[in-house]
Image 1 (spheres, rainbow, N blue to C red):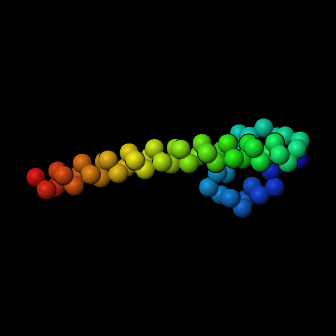
Image 2 (image 1 turned 135 degrees about the vertical axis):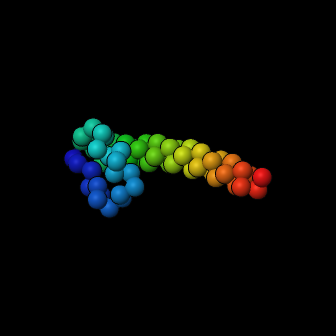
Image 3 (image 1 turned 180 degrees about the horizontal axis):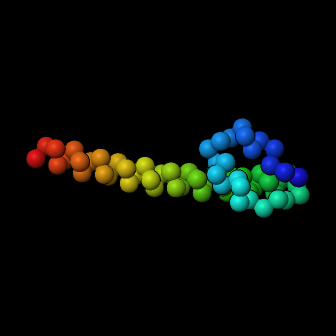
Length: 63
């Protein structure tokens, strides 16, 4: 059993490559969900970081 929609969802493709090959659809789905959550958490963190940096730059420009 291999991950079927590997090309379809590109945004967690970078995590799909390290998922282990499993034998049931439910296992695959569980792994994909875990990968998706991990990706979303990372994205949120990086977005917060970017926002903070932008705010600092704006404040510096005002001064």
